[in-house]
Image (tube, rainbow over all chains, first blue to last red; front, top):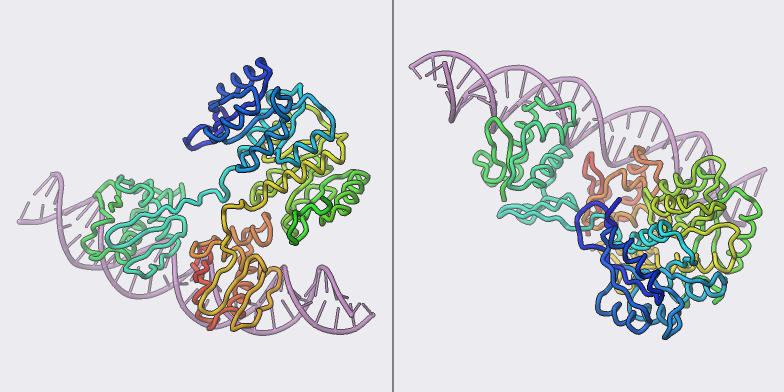
Length: 238
Length: 238
DNA sequence: AGCGTCTTTGACGCAACCCTGACGCCCCCG
DNA sequence: CGGGGGCGTCAGGGTTGCGTCAAAGACGCT
């Protein structure tokens, strides 16, 4: 995985690196940028808190040994207003120090010298669990003048009443709606709804398209939304 | 701070410890119980997954060296259906192993021998960040015309009297209510309530949906709130 | 050890769904 | 102008899935 943000394209993950040792900052910045992270860097606590407030990073990498203030104070300063994941770096192996940092609100604690692979893995873990819960919570709704389709809730509403669809009807509708405006070939429809071994049983499509139209179209015999493209396939239009 | 759960009284934090070395398990259990955690223990991967499904721990401590299966497989088995924090223990210091475990979905990685103080601090950190976000006011109360469900208090009230629900009934109701209006597939229901190894035992659903309807619906044979979507799943409507 | 509660499992009737075939229509093409 | 392929419609039958009931097994409590 090259990009830190998984499959779908989205805003790059923003990292705030706080360390006063130039060579460590340089190594981190290079490695992070190579993996398509967006990186800000600060070499003391004051600028760190400032950058955190203005740039809103998705994750913070914090070295405890700063020139101007105690690293734990930086953690408290951040935790006062944000739950952004904080990954602490430190040369100290002392258990007390780890406990203090973690209880102040740090998410993870890595002792120097550290392996870059491990650090990046811990960073990925921190970012991942901060991601919004629940997977696909987007309420994907498609609306026409006559009915609405809610892909997430698997609901179809027409004239204020819910329309009952059978599994096959729903599946067919789903494929069409996900390709709104585009032509979907008969073969593609058959394979997506009935399975990959189907492809020629166009009579299935005729029956189920008729049922969809009967349940959703104002005038089923003159469909406005479920359009037949003879010899090719079907198309859903808003 | 003696109690792991902050100030306000609430259910104790439940920890699942997975390790095949008895002395480690004993040390962990003693230390955790002394701090008012509720502790379950498993000494192999199979029972671990089973316990995770039935007991729903708030955090998992997992030793990678298990007799029956690879520790990473346990992580994947858990991540298939839950986001519970996973804290990995391991004797291996190898960087590759850490990266693999973290990328499989672990939240933290501690190498043995470990300091108990540090482990407990890391455990607190893992639990803390898994807590519900402060800003998101959970709709813990859901009301219909006939009954109300209080998700926080785990109470159901109907006609002014509390309704007694068995653990399974409640769990099923909870999943449905958290997805009010949305269709929940039979597989999802089975896996959330009975555990990840279930998915086809739809007869369980039939029995327990009937019991929920009998206890909550005005006319159980014509359910208004617990709607069956044949072949797909069930839906809770207000 | 005994009891009660909860969970699991099996059997049965019924309704709904999916598939199938037949028929008629329209449009394209010969 | 006639034939044919593709499409829409309808109705029947096999199959699946759901609701219900009942009883056995598992578990915890007294």
